[in-house]
Amino acid sequence: MSKDLELIQEKLPNRSASVLQEYGKKSPSIAEGKLRFFSYGSNMNEQKFREDTKRCCYEFGLITAEKRTLAGFKRVLCNKSKNHGLAFSIHPSDKDNVEGICHDVPIEGLESFLKKEGVLLKEPTYELILVSISEEQQPVLTLVGLKPFSMERLNYERARKALEYVIASINGSKRWSVDYSDMLEAKNKLREMLGEV
Image (cartoon, rainbow, N blue to C red; front, side, top):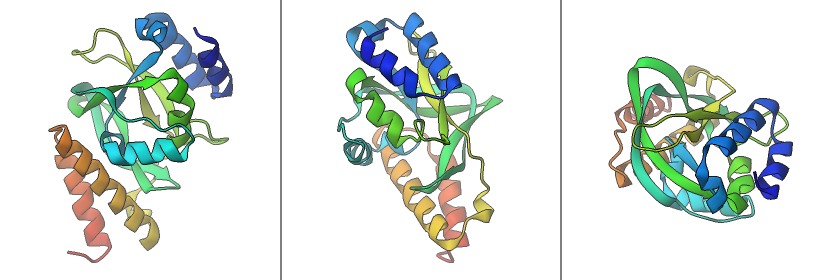
């Protein structure tokens, strides 16, 4: 594992640090200076992704991005977010699949990426997990939420932020021809809560 990666690993909570270490042992992409991630929410929106990484001190975009499907998981708008009110997370579900994208994160941009995702917070909002995706030769990293929160409990301001986040996620999904029917349901529910229907 590279020195840069070891320094980042030291800043991570235990479970995410263990996952990153395991990934480093299994993935040849580390030697090429990159990590492979599966993204399933607003990270599919290139403009938003660039703005978010820039805000966290190292701007980069969606590198070598390709549409992918993660089997055995379901995407749900259920993770409390300071910036977005509510954000998507994934949960194991045998009969479901989540469409998203796999993309590379350069090692020099990893800290910026993990900061924007809330993995490096004192109380992290997401943690790293390793998943297998049939179209990818090696396991890839993804994020799972740690702050479950019900949409119905959102106040007006947080519901408004969540709606903006979901719309950004839908726009990103369209770019990659990713199925966003579940996102559309969340959007409609939020609009109803906000009295926009």
